Length: 380
Image (cartoon, rainbow, N blue to C red; front, side, top):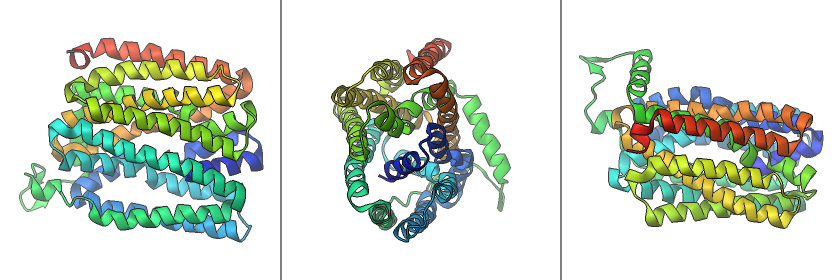
């Protein structure tokens, strides 16, 4: 809901796809801090950190709401606030995924990841429809009241999050005598763990590739597709995002129903290629009806890829370094701002269809290379 409202606002006020992609990139700039957030979760507990992060996001949303109600909001304020939100928001995913790994038995991680993705997709579905409708009827300020309400509820619900703490509940191998070793050394040990794990390295490379070449098309550029290609309004944009969310929800349901943890490596590779193929097909459509249909299939392949990737990573990562590994995995999300920034210039120079073709070709090519390089841990 929040991304839809602000993305449409930026595009409407500036009429620039480059500024839209800059806005999208700012939402993920904090991925550089995700390893530290992961380490902080390992040290202090994930529940406590989630309280602070979600409270901070609620405060930022209140600022946008007030500026919108006073009719003093402008794109510069949105960029500044999005920058600060982007420092924290990506790491919320780190905490949520790590909590799944901490509190769910290994043989049920795929099911748990699927259910978590279903909740996220359901929120995205209703958020897209409600956000677009309220933006059209009430304007940004009043529409943003609902965003503040959602953040407030998320802070309250964090009270029910698992209190599992790796340092308290498990054996802390990182404690040396009466004092713990430094954060820098703990972070270094996390990097060594990743480097020595072929499975983790393969997953991280695929995650970066997907974020660089697939996510920019199916996530950050939807306002541009709606306004400049399909020639539809904010409600139409909401329908596009809802169609994607429906497909993503279906994909999560499929994995929750037929999941098998041992196939997660293969599923993430096969479905990533399918995701690219669907994006190429989507770039050729010219009608809203066909775009909605294709977006459902894009959502399905997206969900099958992301849930399988998350389950595979949680399944092979030791609990004592889980926060750091997932935090470093979040650095792969930095591919989204890089991909978005490049996409703005490529679209203006070559057009949307050619741009998608280039990204899909790069994505499929490197997916095959990664599959061959780490075939022993992916296929066997």
